[in-house]
Length: 214
Image 1 (spheres, helix red, strand yellow):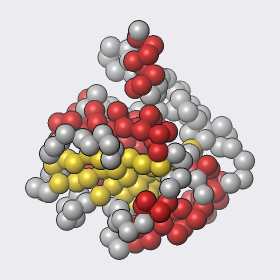
Image 2 (image 1 turned 45 degrees about the vertical axis):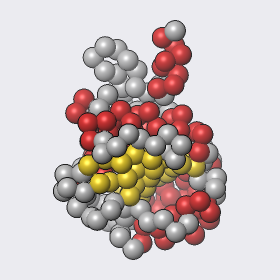
Image 3 (image 1 turned 180 degrees about the vertical axis):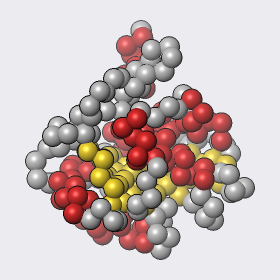
């Protein structure tokens, strides 16, 4: 599924159309949020006019981020590759609409020192409740400051942790934050599985879908 084949669910259209710098997505694991945020990263990387733009998808663990999002991002960006994705570094370089090259990284928040010194124009942090607050406040937030980059925090409701705090911050600051919330347990009304025409369920990570077809 490349970006041209992506059809967002109605519940994620406001997310793609947002004009706020900070976004919080509260959704359960079958809501299709991973597909949506991966597509959003690619759209941002494609449309940016900034020089040498850099984006990132981060999960609590690097291997977790690789399993969940790496294949999605490779598929979505394939028509725009400037070179073959770097499997060792989990890095994609793609041509953008302004004649430049955008870079998308996939990584883990468990090693914040590896992120120091980088700048980002957009970051998605998955399962924020399992990420140390210092990684956001001391490493990632400063990495977005110089170029006024955006961030999207997403996860499932699970107690009062950093994700709960960020959700409250978004709820109380609608002028600067977007809050996309799917009910008490993160479930959106009228949800159906996120599928392609051939019936492939996009809410199941690619590595698991391959196993199921065997």
